[in-house]
Image 1 (cartoon, rainbow, N blue to C red):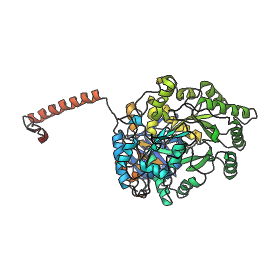
Image 2 (image 1 turned 30 degrees about the horizontal axis):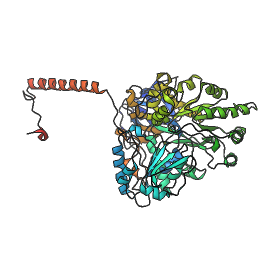
Image 3 (image 1 turned 90 degrees about the vertical axis):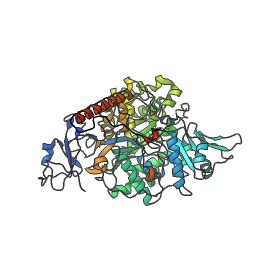
Length: 628
């Protein structure tokens, strides 16, 4: 692999030569001992030097790849603390991504074009990463629009945890008729004639949405590996080097984990994954957990693929819902079976994570933990945490801290903030979730996206939300007292994620002896205007000293991937996240600077004219479109 030529660094190292050197960077290390640096050297996947050009010079050998960061910002590789990366990878190339698409008109044009190339028997599916609030039109597509865009190809469009829109062909393919009963917790919307219209509603359970999606064709064989590798590359595009997989529904162990396992064995993962196990069958949870405890232990694996514990559900009955378009669900008694699951895990040294949206659920869970704490099971050194926790109370946070727990927050309100405000009001939304209160108690607070079925996997959207409190529709939900600064937000996406997997001693900061995971960014995260944080991408992403993503002037330095397969894949044509230009300066300031540029241009023309280098009079602009 060739690298960028860099003058002044002459290969001279022999025994201690680095595999990769990145220099001339503005490095935010995250290390309080040396917070800033200019160059970094990586050998055998581990950072060997953090310093300046002089510090790394003696580590450059004949085989060292040397990359000039050209003064760009470098940060530790990002770690999404709650990402459904395994499930997302198995489906990535089958999905038409509306992540970042600014208008519904553009989204429908993409859908129409994709339907024309999708073979018979396959579906067009739009699954997560977008909200109606991001569109200029501020609305969902209609069933009629889907029918017009794809008269014969099944189309399934999932919108948050709320609903799905199906065209006529998808209703037929899914087997929905006037005689199909509404499932528990869901509604099939019907017209005046009793026939399904194409709208499915979570009321409040999203199971109707996900079970319908599960009827679509899936990938087989090598295509699953190719899809996963391209998804990981897409995550690398945004500087992600690690993720904690939160498991989830329709993700069976070990079957659905075999793809990442095979890629790990072949050395083809480009993202480090710590995964969780989620009992899939109601009534069988204890049996599943017991069997898994006999099969494996947390931290089995290596720094590329490792087991991190159970969750994010332990028992189905204990899970609340996150559909803020519906009232908070009232859960039946679940404590007896839930206690059995928690006891089993704690007694066997297993950590866990728990999906809990509402404080009412969290309080009930904590009561079980406090009962077990009286027996010495909490705190017992097992890593455990609550996910989401939009309405967690101050009292519950105190109890979590006393029991040795942690938190993981996701930017679900980037996409559902408007629905939350309509349901609970701006006062409640201001503390949803109470991030500053969590941090003030000394809790470890990891940050993630909860992608891919609702939020986008782009972590910079989540960082923007942490810092600004704004939704993708630009509604301010969280006021300044519940926002965090840029350094804190970045630490939540780096150091905290490492702590949640017990790896805080080897990753999350750029320090000698730590894993060589880093990202060189397209813009300086610490100085760009707040709106432009959401538009940052990586130009260079390195995992363990391997260049796994390279763009811009670094294009071609990363590893080659097999072509997207099947060739009709939406990703093969449109790619993944649809990047849009940053907002940059305000319109007024842009106009002011444009006026200055015009004036300077005319002054420069006059200077050239006085020296005989240009005509005395300015040439007249001619546009035939405006000529008479």
